Image (cartoon, rainbow, N blue to C red; front, side):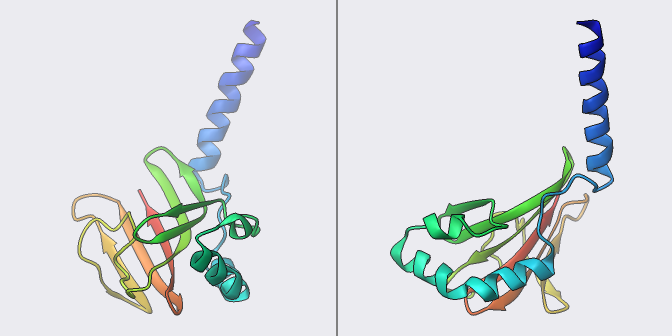
Length: 141
């Protein structure tokens, strides 16, 4: 029993170390997310218009779909605890690039998109238009 306990602690410590180095990651890259949306835009719009996300949930790379004021398609993350990152895309008809749940304040223009960064911390957010009504996001906490 003692050996099992030691093994579990070692595995847990290794997991934390690999996560903090970014080696334990299940997220799609920005490029992969843009490609996913562009290749599946018709299907995604069909799911949205029918309010049925069964087909969208089957798309490889989409891990979770949250429907609210916006539709959030979560495509994975990396890290552990206070060093966690989230990646995905969202759909909104009002072209509001600040609608995602993790933007904590006013966003500012940043390259091809918009970003927000916590004034006295390390939390940050970035969003960029993929195509009509679909936007890429990444959030780091």
